[in-house]
Every structure is written in structure tokens, then in C-alpha cells.
Image 1 (cartoon, helix red, strand yellow):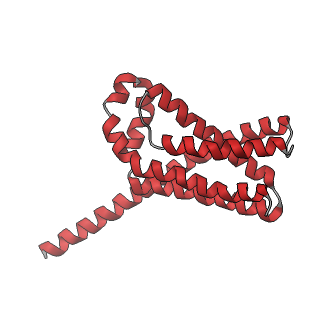
Image 2 (spheres, rainbow, N blue to C red):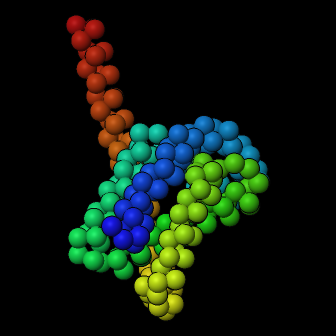
Length: 189
């Protein structure tokens, strides 16, 4: 198997490695920082904090699962049909996502979920990008254009994944309320 295939197949594994840290620590991080964020960054906290406070861990996991399914599908299609440009678009969006975690950590000056695995995942990303550059797989112009497209796709899909997570939570709460009402009715009768 060529080095490029190893790099491509490793991507979903590296992605999940990073996402596991986010899944595990996001709820406790929100609870710990819910007073600090509005005090230090009121405008940013106003936009994002209420969404993340209301998001359950299972719902957040649904968002990650959607992203993983999309990324894995793109990886498989890229290998089967030699569409490495498509894979590279998503890869660069992920690379920028990791850099955003580092910027967030530097701005907040504290731990954020995903920072440790972001740093470790950057080793894979830097190695992969160096391999691509060393082997002249894409031109500089292609890399720039596909990075921009990748960021747009990642941001758009992130918004979609979080809407999906909110729908999951609403459905779960509705189902819970329905079950609770029927249990109460049974106990009364």
C-alpha cells in the first residue's frame, strides 16, 4: 500500500481520536466555564453558550457521528475512485479546525475540550501535508482553493450537525415526556 493510502485511511481514525476527547470533556467544561465565559467574552458567550449548555452529551455524539459518517464516506469514495482531491478538501477543513482549537485555547488561556488531541492530530496533519507537498500531488493554487472550500464545507456541515443534535435532543425530550405522562397515568389508574 502506498504512503498516500496509509495517510488517507488514517484520517477517520485520527478524527475520532480527537472527537473522543471533545465528547468526554465537553459537558464538564461547559459547567466549569459557564460563569467565566460571559464575564470574559460576553458577546461570544451570548452567541454560543446557551446552545452548548442545552446540548446533551448524546446529542453532541449524534453530531460527531454525522461528521464521522460523512468523513468516512468521503475517505472510502476517494480511495475507490481515486478522488484524492475530494479527500484533501475535507482533510484541510479538519486541519484548519485543529488550528482553531489552538487559537481558542490561546485566547481563553485555559483547557478546551479537544486541545490535547488537536496537538497530537496536528502531527498527522503536518506529516500528511508535507508528504503531499514533497510529492507534488497538488499545486499551491489547488491547495489554497481546496482549503477555502474545505473550510466552507466544514463550517456548513458543523452547523448542520449541531441542528441535527438539537433535533435529537428535542425528540428525546418529547419521548421522555410522553413516557413520563403514560407512567403517571398508569400509576393513577
